[in-house]
Amino acid sequence: MRLLLLQNGTLVIHTAPSAPDGDYGIKILRNHSLLVRDDHIIDIAASIDPPSPETTIIECNDKIITPGLVDTHHHVWQTQLKGRHANEMLLDYLYTANAALHATLVSGIRSFFCYTPTFRVAKFNPFEMNSDLLPDWAMKQLEELCKSQPIGDDRVKIGFGCDYLFLPKEILVPLFNKVKSWGIKLFTTHYVHPNNPVLHTTSPIATVTDYNILAPSIPSIISHANSLPVSDISLLQSANASLSSTPDTELQMGVGSPVCFSSPDIYNHSSLGIDCHSNNGASIATQMRLALQYHRGTVNEQLLKEGKNPSKITSATVEKAFHLGTILGAKAVGMEKEIGSLEIGKKADILVWDALSPGMVCAAEHDPVAAIVMHSSPRDIETVIVNGEVRKEKGVLKPARGVDPQVAGLISGEEEVEVPWETVAGHLVESRKKVQARIERIDFEGVREGYMKVLGVDKENLVEGY
Image (cartoon, rainbow, N blue to C red; front, side):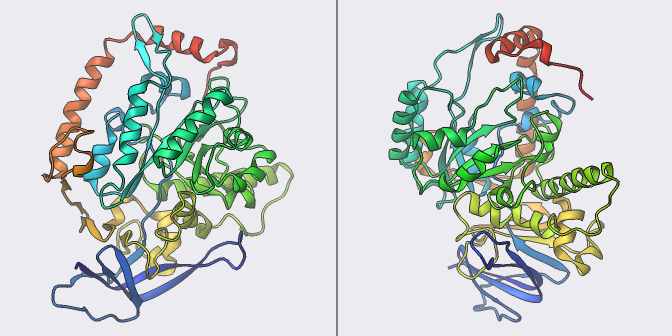
């Protein structure tokens, strides 16, 4: 039995909404403690004595304790490409940008690993796409991964990603029946602005509803959903679907504006994601702030055009932004009864923030939620606990450990090894060099032309950006 006591901190507690689609509340408990046994929270109180001499105690004076943040859309394989897309648009990203399960397991994070058969390049010079969208080997691997569940103490679940919803019904229905029978735990797809000349996406919400291809018990994440039509909003709940807004990439890459604050109905079915950490930082707190301030700015701009000014902020609040990255994110992946808030009986996914850091000092004393949403950076997170295990301590990442034996035959890597971050970083730098050497052999002008033909992009619709 593992016991962990977080003592004398400031706890950020969610309170339940008064109506089914009402807003969650926030309650701040100062000088309170939280007790974890194995992987669950078992007590929250003003004072908790250590249950045994073996209890690990983390002193949390001048600390803020929150639930772990929930990221609902993230291409985690992109580390070696970081810095490459800072001045690029969506088309450039698509043709310049997958063994992530191994890293997911050994990192200690909680995750849905959404296996996604994707468009593949047959050759670069001259450019040619592979016409086999659903190769047998990919479907066999997905089946094997599904059958290997539970993985990593059930921290990692297998989902299914599919951007092929343009395929005919006679292909999609049997495909989804098959992956559902294998035991996928989540479905996800991309959906950008319907007028986007690069990705001509049709509504996945309408497609999955019309074809009745999802099981109500399987949560679905629709990523981006920029300029969501009113007809789709009404379908979200019946499809057990939620949205993932990724403000950093959406605002840069011309796919449309973040929708998470655009209406109460959309907000209640929204969450936040990082999307591409090759393009931007991987902080959900930053996405909270960016989504919030973008919405405030667009509303203010419209009022100024009308010769008006808002008298106060009523709906786009820091508390609502915080919910998007915590309890609403948990709700989006169907785990709101297990994670997303600090409650007795829930999984011990917990963050401890330094309230005296240069960024958060004074703000934390006045309003802990405002301190996190408006002033924090990842450096302010002093301790990370996932499934009751400390994964970051005193600001330092703990070593990655081993690989789950159930998937050892499906992925490369040794079992039961400890790898410190310095070793991981060194391997990433060396791997990036190899990736760069391969990239330099590619004729990207030819690839760009070929990719535009595949996507049916009309050059007349491409103009100089900002």
